[in-house]
Amino acid sequence: MPALARSAAPDLDLAWLRLLTAAELLAIDFYGRTAATAAIPARQLLADERAHYHALAQLLTRAGATPATAADIDFSYPRRPHAELALRIERLMLGAYVGAAVSLQTPELRLAVTQVAANEAQHVAVWSRLEGRGPVGPAFAPALTIAAASNALAEFES
Image (cartoon, rainbow, N blue to C red; front, side, top):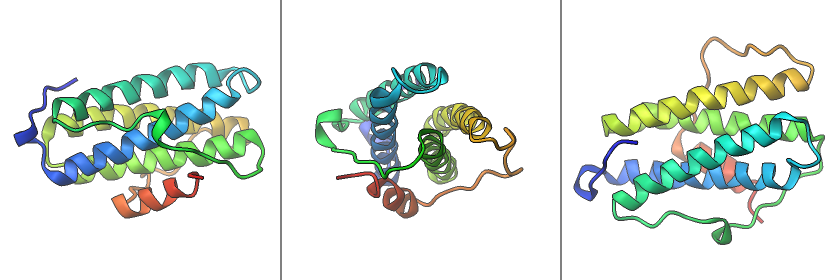
């Protein structure tokens, strides 16, 4: 993980880190609720999301900010088949990370976010396959703006 000082983190970068941290908390909550009963890959995906969260939380802490925790957000989920909902969440995650990679001003943060985006694309492929779709998506993954990512994330908050 890159070292990051408060003076080196523009406000927009910190806003993206906060949003991505909240998105990781969503994925952790979802997989935490379903990993024991869901498809086998959910356990590995939960481990990935926890690793992403801890890395982002470290970056925020190093920048002098306090990362959100699971106790800060209550999530709720619409009634949908598990794989369909997981795919929706993972597409949100991928779009947020791609959007952040385009928007971040700090090169070290862009590297970390791009690395996570690659992993989120793998998650999308897993759930696409389990949904009966092909594992390969569009040639260019959509990039969400911070506002669009925030709005999509808000749909899961109670």
